Length: 425
Length: 102
Image (cartoon, rainbow over all chains, first blue to last red; front, side, top):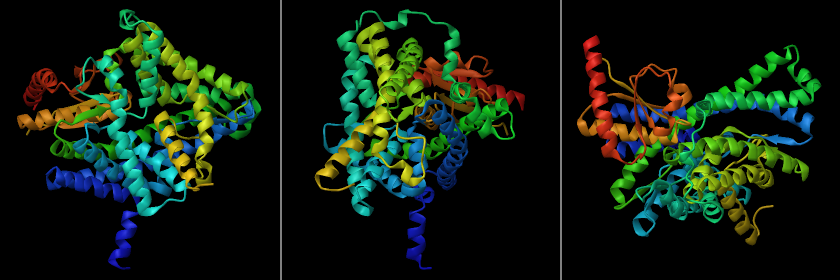
């Protein structure tokens, strides 16, 4: 085997490719030898841990799909960017990794040479968007260098410009321009700010209302996820117990439900841990480089950055968003959609809460409720309509798909432009 | 030799915000020439860990009820000055307690 062969094999193993990026980033930050080795290993481990999580998650979710189908006659979807992109990494991991890292570079270039000074520090969403972009380009038959080049430019432009779109509302949330909003909930945040402005009353800030303390528990995602998973298994079982008994085989139903749902929870938490680890070394490197090269750079940050400004809105957003989602599922069922997204953790705990905070900033209590409700109701419908756009099933990935709207928008744009050029079936 | 102070940056899911908090704390420690172990986790996992100091956002403080160590909270994640003012005294106090124990 020649050196070239070995190099190519290494670079096309996503775990190792990302490890190399982390290594370069750490060296550029002038870290000590030990820190470079540790950081690189942690990044590669993060990837492998992500794979283990996906593996544990997939089994129970297949049982869930079966239960849902026999109880409701439609395909239940558990949407999540981390899961959907995570599951695709074995197929397109290298492309995604390259688009993401070169996307960071494009972000830096755009920030350096244009008035858009935003540096996008939400690593896991940069990764998710890179995944959506790469997958969309793959379906158009674009591969290799053109894929990475086009993908990186799109991603880099998105990273520098999305925070500018949300800033008019973001500055009302945080009371200034010190930092911006960097997340694929950008369109969701913008819509919420807009709805609040049009329908709400900014004077009646929701923070004046007191809520029961027990609601705070939902911030513990192990708890919220466990409860969600248990419900996702229990409800279809009540509707169609025969199906569950059959799937449970020799185990009794209660035992089966508990183990399946909590194994799915465990798998999900492991996925989060994996993402945490590999993003954990890349983002500090990115930030360090950006600070050196872009005078006047401003960070665009993850959605929880707004929560401290309106904690009551966060709680209301969770409850209202959850109810809204159930309504949306009902509507999807009534209009006969084939795919019904269930309330997976992320959209309700992070998306609807973000909608609530933006709605409150521009529209007070009324704005909060309208924003969270609209977001919760339309999300499963949007998710259902978007699901067939990318052929996850061709890659053996079923029961899950992309979640966040900004990725939907860009995938559709890419497929649309591709169709103009006669690409993609 | 006394063990390192163990610090945990905590946020909702354990990557976006807690990573930013972790970087902010590491910056502060580096500026002062101090060393400690800094990690990042979500709030649910945090409760099961044995750590000295948790750094988190203001809205998560209530959900960390029952944590035995010290909690330092922020509202504005980019206000490094305020974080430093709140964090360093707590850090030094914990470090003294560790050294006294050993």
